[in-house]
Amino acid sequence: MAGMATHVITGAGSGIGAAVARRLHARGDDLVLHARDAGRAKELAAEFPGARTLVGDLADPDRLSWAFSHQSLPDRVDSLLHIAGVVDLGPVGELTPKTWRHQLNVNLVAPAELTRHFLPQLRAARGHVVFVNSGAGLNAHAGWSAYAASKHGLKALADSLRHEEHGNGVRVTSVYPGRTASPMQAKVHQQEGKEYDASKWIDPESVATTILMALDLPRDAEVNDLTVRPGN
Image 1 (cartoon, rainbow, N blue to C red):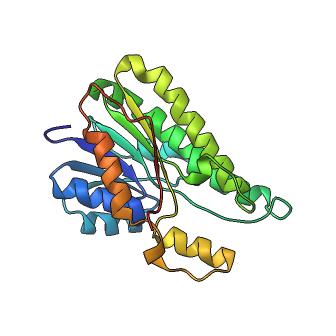
Image 2 (image 1 turned 45 degrees about the vertical axis):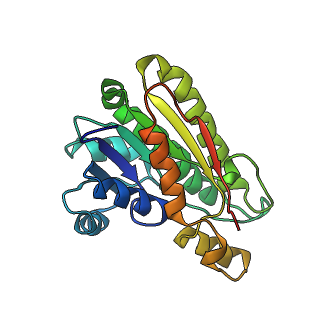
């Protein structure tokens, strides 16, 4: 993806999303950073000089279309990077519909809605959609039902999209990182009642490296599914 590519990124505020945004910003690409509210947008704009922001609440996908209609969207989109996510653990016997819906909205319905919005630009650019999934998108463990369901759903979204858009030259990649050192991981450990030691988990920079590799691959190849595991 030589030259000035434009990337729309969710989750650029922390963890993997921040690492990816820093790399792309450093090499001079154009960034459009999604933020849930104006305050967050301001923080992101300060952190990434020259980046544009896009405000909308992923927890309320029904209103994203309305929110975007009041903002200027990029004319060109070379990649749409779905990196934002939320996690809330608990046994099936205790999870409420509200907890289920929040995770399904942010992790699955909002990415589908963002993709719908940017597909015309992605088709025009023969662009790339990257879904940062999770090991939970392939296996569901005790306590992880709602989160894993949202991530299994995200895999289905990516797979269907890949088949639908192949003829339009749009590439689709799912990345399945194992546990990554991030604020989300700290929260997970807290919910599990475990001590959090960042050094035991994957550095977000390592996951960012795999995402950039997928983006930068020559046109003759496409990374479909990439699993990244802790190495220590």
